[in-house]
Length: 189
Image (tube, rainbow, N blue to C red; front, side, top):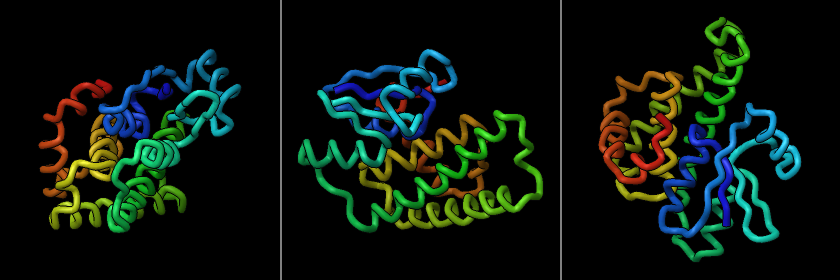
């Protein structure tokens, strides 16, 4: 098996952290590099990372890869509550990645435009909800949902996409997780 992706993608990183006990290779690609982009065009119609090659099978998207490996390796499934939290994490992560890409395209994402207002509102509402969940201990178990939350928080801090410094439970979770070996091994900085 080979996981293909960038070291800065929060979606790739969550899989790299989750897969620490799974034998696999890792191929680093830069989706903005023309040679790496050509590889994606040939093998992955989504033109996004991550993707997983397992023999003749190629799996696209971090969620699909997680479900595929979870079933293949008979790993414990997430509860419905954890799946809902993962949906929140993915939703805000998707919004912030889109804002990041627009910023890299020299578009002023701080403008008072409907699209940007909706993304900022989504981020505020979801981060507040994730903070409440963290306060209640929803992320104390180290699993795919908690790994995904850490990768989101670390990515927004790294890319300066959202200031969650007033959300004390998220700050505590992020700071305590920075010390994990998987976090240090996959740190894109």
